[in-house]
Length: 333
Image 1 (cartoon, rainbow, N blue to C red):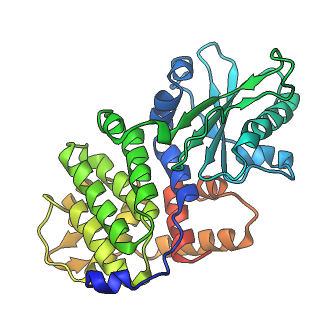
Image 2 (tube, rainbow, N blue to C red; image 1 turned 90 degrees about the vertical axis):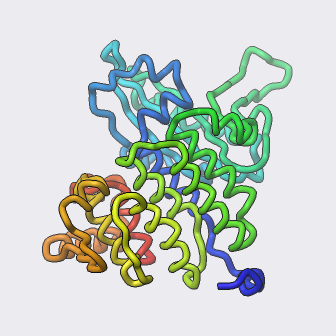
């Protein structure tokens, strides 16, 4: 497709910041806490299982509810005490001065139910703007002693060079987010961002077992019209197989690989395992069926009912959150 044709397009699908960052936090929970809250990470007992607990606090939904992603996690500290982290991801705010106030309101409600647990809030602002004091709420200007100040990370405060120098999956995801923020207006810019990110992970000698995580993140975050699906798949999935197997793949086969890799990932296997087992031979791409199709149908039904969160569905069907999100996306639910 020529660049002239691309320039004539005006309808671009929205960027899926919300679901992508839920996925990032699910894939790299420990690296995320170590990156954003290192002082807290050192007190968490990582040998103990942590859990996402959004549903348990759904009754605290406020009329002026926070507009974007709220993630609630519960950890066990080295001291044995429970610790709840309220992590709020803000993408774009028309009233940034109210965010800290709403976070405090939410924290108080949680604390009223669990006074014996440690509770902390954290704001991750991934938009282009830089809002000073986004984490501070001071209700009375004449009383400096009455003040709430939470932890935060402002993407706009950190340069591309700084993120490039940090060898962390979270830094790479933030870098992709920063590139998307500045290249979301046209399809050409989005495609170039995708190529740039794929090149980044190839050049940084990232563990092959994690490559499919990053490319899945890129697939979710870099949204493009259906007409560019083939070109997008070529960038992502041809690179996924790079240096593993040499194929001359057409668009149908690339789509088959995409579905096969998602099924493989749901089973906890790596791309390398998948290829070594001979699931792809020559130009033949096979897709597991039978029980997997039945499970997909049941997950689809649960998504349509809308009574469970994505995390709860993943737990009920013993699959990854990423797998549930992929079904939701493909079924347009």
